[in-house]
Amino acid sequence: MTRLLGLCALIFAGLLPMSVMAQGPNWDGYYLGASLGARFASNDWVTSRACPNVAVCSGGIPGPDFAQTFNSTSARIAAFGGRNWMLGSTWLAGLEAEIGWADNRNTNSPIPGTTLSGGIVPSITNGDTASVDLSWDASVRARIGALVQPNTLLFATAGLALQRVDMTATCNNNGATTYCTSPPGAPHYEVQSLVLPGWTIGAGLEHLLAPNWLVRLEDRYADFGQANPTFFTYNFGNGGDDRVYAHVYVRTHTASLGVAYKF
Image 1: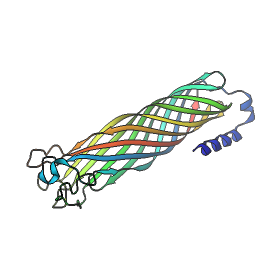
Image 2: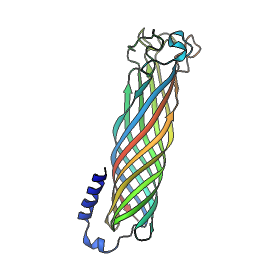
Image 3: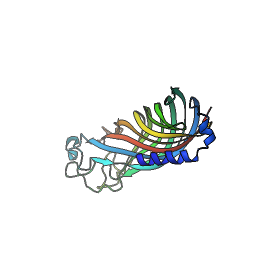
Image 4: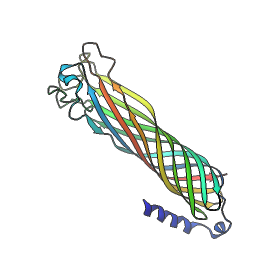
């Protein structure tokens, strides 16, 4: 990543008109922009209990597949805006807000932790699935940077972030090889949606191509902690207990190329 940022700085410097450099560019002020890139999602699903009141589930002890990864990669678009303040002739501080969208989806089978729970539930689950989907995200961040050239800024950024997460569990309940049992023959499909708060940190390069146009390359990591959904609670007490206690850990990594107009 360090080599890539260095190469971009050299390329941008080579494209810069000498007349612009001679003017002593002004980085201070407001800006609005858009970016295109990729978001890499690292999601871990851990089931801590499964059908705790049913004998074949050994009192809620999950099966050997209690942990699964739901990683995915998606294209991402975003809009951002902020304000820069010059601190002397070399340093810059700023505030920035961003909202982005990507379609990170991953589906696994079976539902984590629902097979061989007590040595009786079959290991083949006849199409039972679980999925983790990430859509929009947003952040409000501080920035601090240094001008490595009059028109090239190397910056670090950190702040608060939000991530929309949809977690889905599907249980066919269509025979001996499915996890669910109650009501007999009734399939289960449940989606739980949350907006998770978290934090984000990153770094990048920004270059002033003209007095009012900026181009940037940014790399950022975000951690949103964990969601704790419990699935299939609606049928508890109707002759069975298909509850699944899940813990989904959500982390993302984004890389983007953006262009902004400075007012």
